Image (cartoon, rainbow, N blue to C red):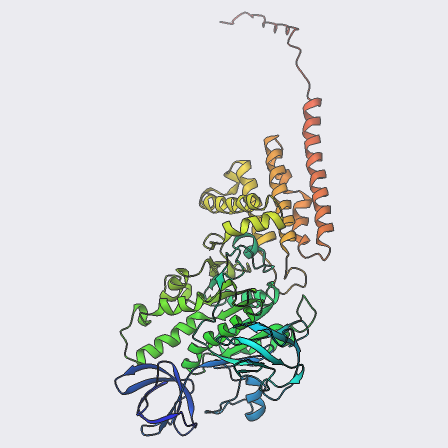
Length: 611
């Protein structure tokens, strides 16, 4: 305990909420509870009593035990060594804890988030005499194979460099000195609940390419954007977030497992270190930070975990990187807030959630954005939050509060899951409010007709939904041929384009150029089929086209472009052949000579007895 720490005692214990007296803290100060020094945070002050949420299990804690106020808020250590780490909700490295005490983490253990003994090779880019301001870059260290970690001046510090070193240092050693005597090291601390300062927010006009056809084509997210993935049990929220973590064109991934089931988090911890980064061939963990806080861990740490994750994301954003943050799931985070709120005896809101649920969600999602930092460098943090509504009910408070904040809604559908349609994103319920601002980028970088093609495909799917009621009543055979063609094209869009196999080596990722080529091929089939129908060709002949069935296999081919070109050639050949048969049948039909009158039919001869 330092001289500045103040000591009081426990007055009351109610689960993870402890009431203390004898200290005079500020809101959100970190305190240590009991003889074991469990870490907690002041969340309410009532007169001389301080209400504290404890990040660890409070079993065995009793009134009268000491309480120590550190006078500082919950902070994250920011510096080299964050990447490839696995933390709990308050930035304790789980690998280090496992080495020290095995698989069962003891209470009251306080381990720094960074390795303070490892030496890093510092390469200065600034020099003595340079004036620096907050977030100015002093130099860099090679944190992983493909990520340079830029060492920045901490926020709140500025001046003129009088001395800067080069060589190998730990993060606690001084690498530069300012004219006012301030010594700069390779790390600093930042309170996790406070957004890091920026100079300006930029327009969301650059897409975050995910490689998932249904997302990029119909419901794109911008770099610096916000998205929600709500869905019932087993609809694929976690697999979708794994796909985004692996394939999105973000430089760094922060994956926050806040309150997920232990077996799901165990799968993440097992799979991520084994995954290969498709961009570099290096392990994906080299550019990933994992925060693991399962549903059986203390609720207070779960509530803090999302702030810890987004603080790390903002730190790398200030270096000029694009960050994708996955929060899985914000429903469990909200449940932790509900539990703590009930312990505080606050007035409950809808379904028992606290009245400030919406404002807390807003605080979190609004820290996303593509920005210009204080150092004039552009970077972005894109936040994608999974929501787990009970029974798949999207009208519940967490989903509704999230939808009022985020700009992209990827609705996962239980019925699609039952039909084994993955990703189970419902194209009729989902939406993206970034589409209009991103259309110019797609038109310029993918295809000039991209916008019209996407609108056509969505119109076909919507029309199919309208026709389904008629089909269920009278059957598809009762429809006109042009509507039967539309139903077949809609089926192709669903099965050939929207369905994507996350576990197939080729189909797991589809670039925007491939998406455009496949969509163009389906549209070409639609246009040709409509022309054939208007020419009088039977719908049964159109449905038997070999190229239509071959198109389903193209997305699994390594040489996608060549195979698709073959399908297009086959399709045009089949269409010409059918047109030729119709034209030949018309020419060979016998004609009637209208100039030559037909001979009159002979009248029957009347016989005796005829009346």
